[in-house]
Image (cartoon, rainbow, N blue to C red):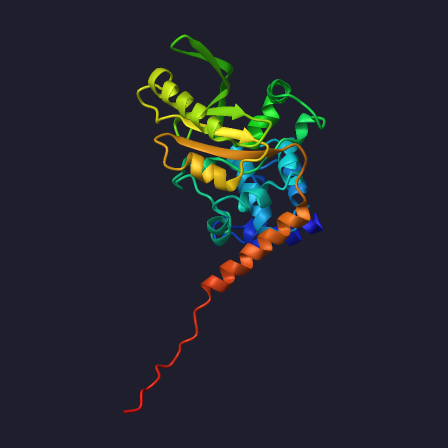
Amino acid sequence: MRQFFLTWAPEKIRQTVSGEFTHALGLNDLAQAFPLPWSAYVRLLTVKNESARQFYEEESLRSGWSVRQLDRQIGSQFYERTALSKNKAAMLSKGANATPQDAIQPDDAVKDPYILEFLNLKDEYSETQLEAALIHRLEDFMLELGSDFAFVGRQRRLRIDQTWYRVDLLLFHRRLRCLVIIDLKLSGLTHADAGQMHMYCNYAKENWTLPDENPPVGLILCADKGHALARYALEGLPNKIMAANYQTVLPDAAVLQQEIEKTRLLLEAHSKPKPHKPKSRSNK
């Protein structure tokens, strides 16, 4: 309780109460100030970084995480991995205070990499085994993807001319209001993978998309996307197609923290006003 009091100071505890209210808080006031279960705050106390703790607290409330889900997200360094995403500078500069009014783009909805340590896969496995493991641990997989994803189906069949194809996973993103097609690859990204996903998106746009939905988005989950190949193969396509790496082991927390601090220093250096240089007078 002492640690809780030191972490959430009195002025924060009283933030939802009228300034004229000076005596002890009632249970209703405390419930309003601290809406999460007590077990969640006990777990949050173990997060020493204030920005990370605030991020986890807000995400727990917004996404409705259970204590077990919160524990998994903290254990897999979800804050650090999110902060090291494509928009890490923007996230760190605003203190990770996302609001429901924030506009979201497909790039914002996709993390890179995805951590799938809960699958307990050995060193060698097939794409079929990877897909089966994801379906078996669907709840954990959806938690890793993010709270706005909804599962639609697996091995969704589509026929083009006389050939049948299968989409590994089909999801729907509530805020983007579009289907998300996921293709699983054990090896690195190839230009053929991009072409195949482009075909899937075109078919889904014409046959699976409802009138009030946005065009589908393609996501290729692979062991190594190759940054240069991903840029040349995926940029400029009519459909939004992205590639992201996945890992079946937890990331190194120390390495993630070093990258976070490096980005913070760059942000601080960028925000400091530049010293004024006096204009030199030329001798006439």
